[in-house]
Image (cartoon, rainbow, N blue to C red; front, side):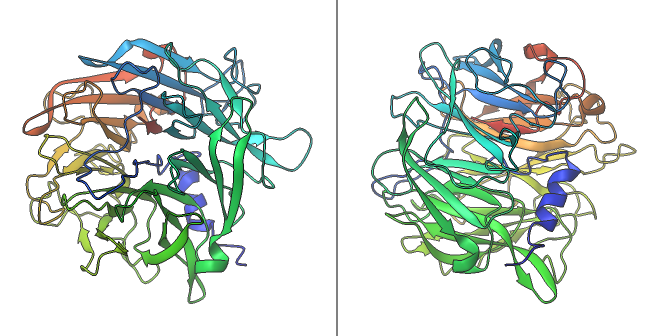
Length: 483
């Protein structure tokens, strides 16, 4: 087994500290193909409005640098309400663990109803958590949803694999199609995909665990896990992102595993460092959108000038025979220009921003320069349509956009994380954009509204970590988003 197959991904993650290059996205499976336009909405308190979890993985908690926390902002009829929030860390009563330097609590987050009680739960992959005095590390903490929101949590305790930064990536879905939500988790230094079968009890016991050696089966290790319904059946599918051998080195590559009693590989697709699955052409099948923020080369064929996204269309058998489509900032209709180092495709999210039934895609270009502000960052929203994803009607947003609070500054990394979700229940997904480098690493998050014309800068608001009750100082608030 190659010893270097994590080099690029781990290096890219380190570039943004622990670097949540992907907030793993989940989408519900359907019994039959129906238009699916939005990632699953997280409703932690069951009030019918979508909620948002925001990670701050390097925050100092209880005097420990890099202990980390997650802030949760609850949705209302007026959208996300910062006054209705909670802050969760290992110092919070009811949350397992103790704040320690380098735990990075919140660096990996996803959502799903693991105990099947009708409330969405928050899952935190605490991959930096040291297990006693052993050489093992990594915990999977489930913070349980309920009428009062997120309050208490449990670590998944059994059955567990050997742990080497377990929780490096986490994603939820009904992978075997039995109607129960399962949890997928990766170890940093292992090719094994771990699937914890639901339901998970509030004592931390999963109904079972399956380990799949993706490297042995496909030549691609498990580094990032993205879930969605590509083939329109009753089981959630998994996109495994990692690296494969190429010449004397390795290159990024992804493989689709179709859901079933035991998920099976169904074909390789474009590699990258971010992905989402959504129905951009409204044919009832989820489409795989991968983002590769690197430059195009022999080792990174799916990169582009300043980065690129690739759309691989879904079908009843998993992958369509349609030729994948590659989009850069040089694609007709896409705002801006493809410039080296822009990092277009750094982050991705899917949702229907204008209510037309087609999934749109938010693309973070986290290192895009704006005037003299290097790596200030921007977000481009691409529109879905019957013909698929194109640049037609695309919009760009940054701190230089009229109506957006703040000022574009060097190393803000606006668009380092993105999310599209309908928090106010009006049928249109709003854009959330994170800038983990804002104010020398304090970080911040921007909330945009959506109209019948899609995302608008009018009425945009910004949130800081201290503004939602988090501790002051560098925290990378907004490094990861789930909801």
